Length: 307
Image (cartoon, rainbow, N blue to C red; front, side, top):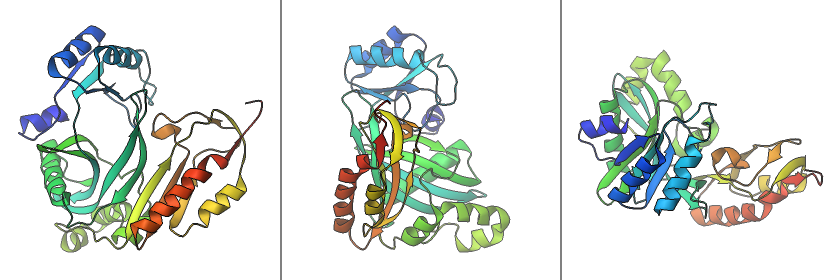
């Protein structure tokens, strides 16, 4: 994917793949730190490390090569990439015959752990006229053209570097955090409904949506909670659940674990504990409720003493 963009003249990360730890470390040393080490094929932050030294690259590469991906596939090679400095954004679109509707642009906020793992925290919706939305949208259009993506939904992750946008990756799928009711409320439409419209009523999609963009109707945040708990979930703390549900800006939330499930300290999206959709008239109210969620989140899952 990245090499296709490079061949098309688009800005993107430098990279090198190998099954040899020493070769990966050598490339990193010659190209400069920090770098990102990750599997060639995975998702949700699985096996992704940000490394600042030769030793960290070697440890991360060895860990990737010794592990399976979330798809149950072995890693014969690992990828090392130049680190893209700047904020990261999600750019969601729906295409038909190469003509597109911009469904939403969201800015990621992540937390870098001491282990080098960069975990999801929350993302917030930007206004379509707000910088750098126009630059991001134009870049993703060029990337989709270069990759031959002319139909269906796309979910791109892009970093706005000092030299302009650079693609992390793009999936030809609906965004994982897309919830129809929530996105209808905050953006005036949702990627699932627009994908169905493009396939079932292409003339209507082209007439009413192609070349257009979403409208931001309110402040919106999707929050992914982390944990340091380690054990087996004995039961759900209903009082904490009810308190979260009663917060003014909480639109809905999903518990990712149930009694009997193993809960472990968060290192990626799959080990996060809840997904919470928040919206309101102003960001101050969302921030206030977000802080309260930080207090309540580990009271939701009660750990078995024998776990």
